Length: 157
Length: 157
DNA sequence: AGCGGATACGTAATATTATAACGTTTTCGA
DNA sequence: TCGAAAACGTTATAATATTACGTATCCGCT
Image (cartoon, rainbow over all chains, first blue to last red; front, side, top):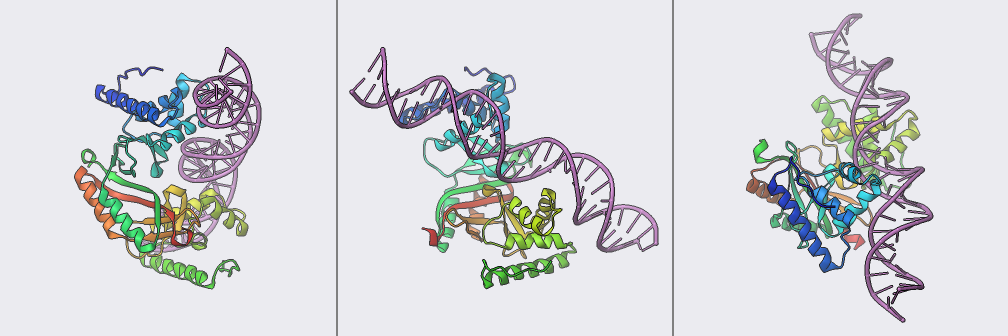
């Protein structure tokens, strides 16, 4: 279950995945949550790119190393990872991205490039504030937000 | 193809659907777009509630009056209606809602009550502004936004 | 160490959501 | 009224996600 370096990915990116996993291990330890080998592997696969990855892409990857893998295998792992803020679901893509600041509780806001597929998670407090303002007008209590901006990243314009 | 009054819906709501359809007819006329009987019927079905409705719910309703209805029937109609801003897709629900101000081009922002299912479309310009600010920081060009707040409406809290 | 409940996982089946492909019909301007 | 474009009918299938149920593993407790 060790992470093989991949010729198609930069050294930096492998390092970044490694860090993400280290953070996850740490976080789960603190919380008494069981980051099992499978869950860790799914996390690595999600972090394997800066794109959002589809559940069935993860499944295909996983099945290569573990022929018994089935949809629930992946969805269960994702559910766990999302519950711990290690991964977010991108509703507008039916796909999943690794979270690069899982430590703190936060609302996810994404910029998604429709050119290269890059997903950037941002934290723009004024978005949250504006939303809160809108919610107050309606007497609405916000529990969860989906904020996903599609367009073109700088490189793809 | 006439709209029957429904015992389960208020007079006001029927009136509201009627208005929505009138607006749609008007708008399509101006744009030279063909709001066919089927498309109009799907629009009515979407407007039939203030909830977001699933494509296959629409299909079931439609199939009751028109046994030949199939998924493409519904999805094509929805595609047309969305292209004209008469309906929005709610990504976080895989569902569709009627738009109550289709006349002007606008970005859709929703408050979705997880209690009663009510969907309120709002226009809070400060959300758009905050997003623009975030985008500028990244040099990102935003083409389309998904802003969906889940929580509880005033009545359901 | 060994029991027992809780958690995680294996596996098959199926539900839900959406699109592809291709032929026919309808619309509408030239 | 002809012909191209748009809309629609129909079948099939792709893509996404969950249910259900049995087994294995973990872990606190004695």
